[in-house]
Amino acid sequence: MSPQDLQLLIDREMPFGKYQGRKIADLPGHYLNWFARVGFPQGEIGRLLALMQEIDHNGLSYLLDPLRSGPHAKQADR
Image (cartoon, rainbow, N blue to C red; front, side, top):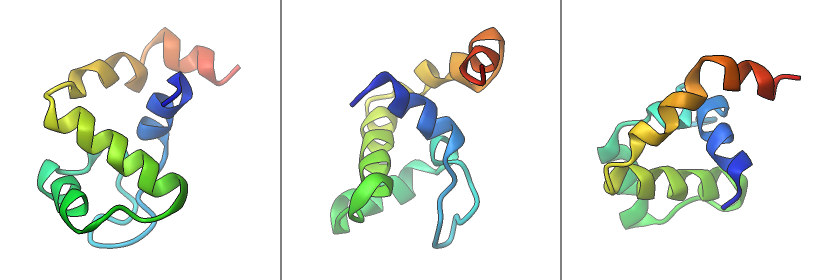
């Protein structure tokens, strides 16, 4: 995991499935846990889903809050 991965969780949208178009950081825990049981997809999306599942499972979703808005988010666009 890199620090950029955390920002990708906020920025990247789910490209398929029931929650298509929803930001990965906003996917429900039961959906992430389902992927953990059946297997994550290959590539970047699978890596990000696995990371988000780990964050959610351990109750650490609040760590993404500073990245959602505020000066830090605007700084990332520069």
